[in-house]
Amino acid sequence: MEQVRSQQLSSTQNPTSNIQPLFLDTDMYVMKVWCEFVFGQCHWFILDEIVDRKYDLYLLCNTDLPWTKDELREYPDLETRETLFKMYKDLLINQSTPWVEIRGNNDDRLKMAIKAINKLLYEHRY
Image 1 (spheres, helix red, strand yellow):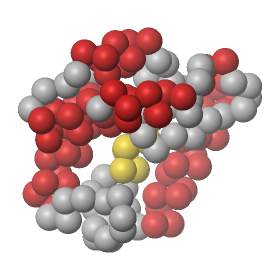
Image 2 (image 1 turned 45 degrees about the vertical axis):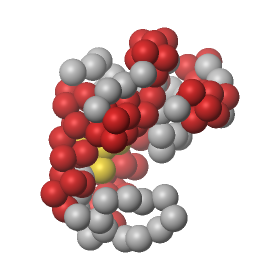
Image 3 (image 1 turned 90 degrees about the horizontal axis):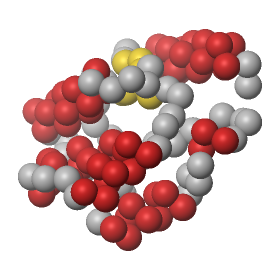
């Protein structure tokens, strides 16, 4: 876990100092949920990084699209996917960074994501 954490952090060095937006599909919240789901607990070093790292917006994808197999995706069954989604949603509800739930078909999802990002960019004037 430490190696995965280190690789993730090195690819996102101090994201809040960047002038341009930085888009990530994995952060320490993902690591936290994955650890808790797979191992039943989260490593302290992941929790420390959650406190230290700040982001501007989270896009949380709902489970309302069919699962598509690829080399990174696991858990094709809807029940497990919904459990993980609820874990992510609970985390986002209980933290201060704005977040948007992305749902619907592919076009709807793209529109929702663009709208949320444009709102953020307008508010922060990137």
